[in-house]
Length: 89
Image (cartoon, rainbow, N blue to C red; front, side, top):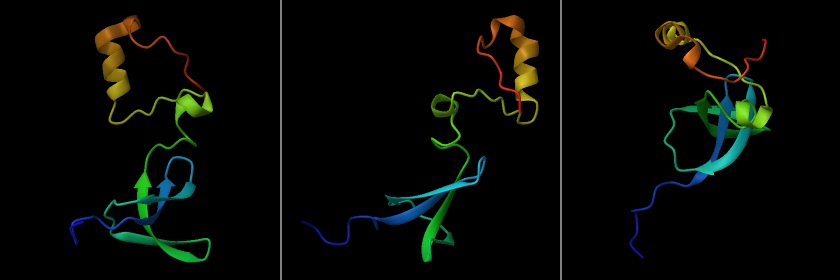
């Protein structure tokens, strides 16, 4: 097997910013930030959605309006859009 061709496979902390949930897994992702988690220093990857906050796993549907995209979609397509119910909060 060739040497020095494989990426660094190590433990990394993923931080779900939407619900402040952190978990450790192994990854080759390159990071600039580090964090202390359970008494050890780990590379940190910030993410917007994980299984802890994703509507498929939580059963709650949320619409995150980024720069009016949802309203723009509704104006363009009206009632033809999504047929799922929107969670309050």
